[in-house]
Image (spheres, rainbow, N blue to C red):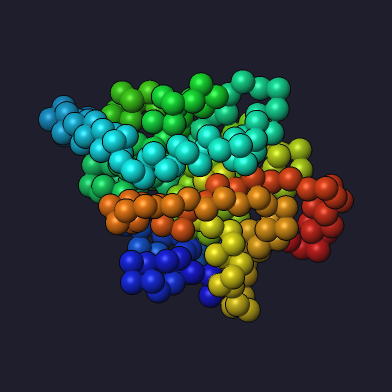
Length: 273
């Protein structure tokens, strides 16, 4: 089965679930039909000023912790190395900035891992002038959490795109530990080289999906484009460095897409992928 690493080294299927907690323990439930994109509102519609202050303080502390960590130093070193920075330049093309889209961030009020993930995104924007506006969506976000995100310069999306955003301009999709179907949706929405070449993707390792896949029909449906995209993907695994950052970033990689044979993608589509 397509699997995702846990603390004890075991692997389990990463497929859709309605709510993800901070450690995002994967659930084997498969959502047969994806919901259509539609306006979304949290059930928690009131902004609580006291909660807002507490969540903002948690985020500020998280950013400080990440910024001073060996993990972040190593993370930056990888982004600045020519092998990876050249990939970002190719994605940018003639543009000056990549917009960043974060799907599935989770509850920044309740869990540390989502705060670490958001901290990395915010720090990237502060570090690199080529990182543009940060857009965020997760159905678990409360109005209070959304207000905190906005205070850090993020835009909270009002529509659940199901990760089907078309990359009409250079876009960094930040999706650590999302379900396999969401990566599949993203690839399906952009299954042509002129769009894939505009994407930088941070998320679960495609190589891991390929290595762990079997003939399970449900798993194949959830990952078919992920596996097909491996032949045109340049992947760079990150190092979590310390146990503090393992739950938030284990088995995460940068992914970039390019092909010497543009005819490959139409062929894959025609084969039902």
